Image (cartoon, rainbow, N blue to C red; front, side, top):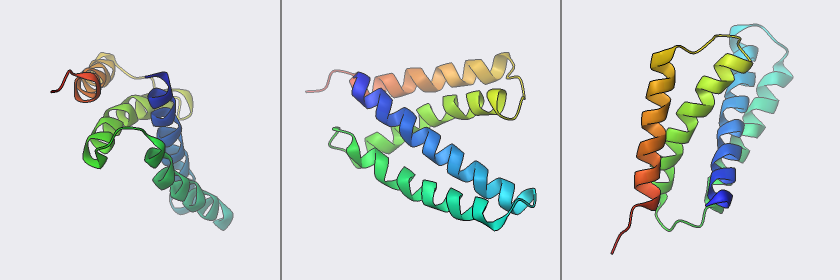
Length: 108
């Protein structure tokens, strides 16, 4: 379980970090190499989730979506300095509950 969480977090950081660099390049006129670095990091994002041991692509990516929501809220708070409100945290918590049900519910 810890390994799955680490892979989800790494994938999330790659997606958010790569996207953020592309955002800075296109929206805030940063140098072109921000976009190149962001694109390369986004390629890594495409690879990292394949390291999961879960057999179902759809389930892995759906569960990853919930982890992404939490990481995006944290990124906004820590990097963009936008303090999340109660509803941001509540929504993130609901996503994590959903992820937990999807991945670790007993199945026959």
